[in-house]
Length: 91
Image (cartoon, rainbow, N blue to C red; front, side, top):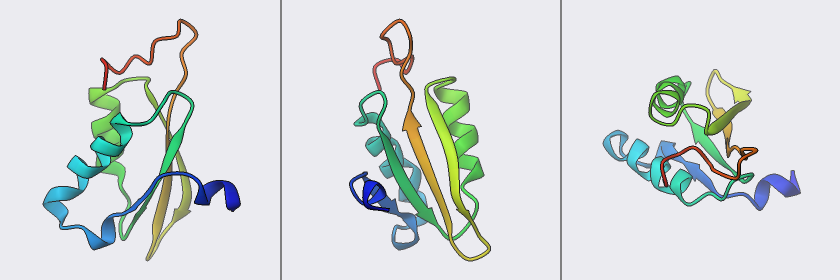
């Protein structure tokens, strides 16, 4: 648990729905390869995962820490690539 506390985190339950993905993508863009962030939500953030996979294929990992029914927690990590490129188009 102490390692989780040192990671950037966002609780989207306190953010208006139309602002959530924009804020999350801003935080993801600031992640260095090999680092990760935590997201807490009141629903399965699967649409976010699909958006990540479509826009940045192979650039981010996804790990459910809690899967509801009331609280969903996900760790998203920026993947390291063997060639030193993040594969995210500079985001």
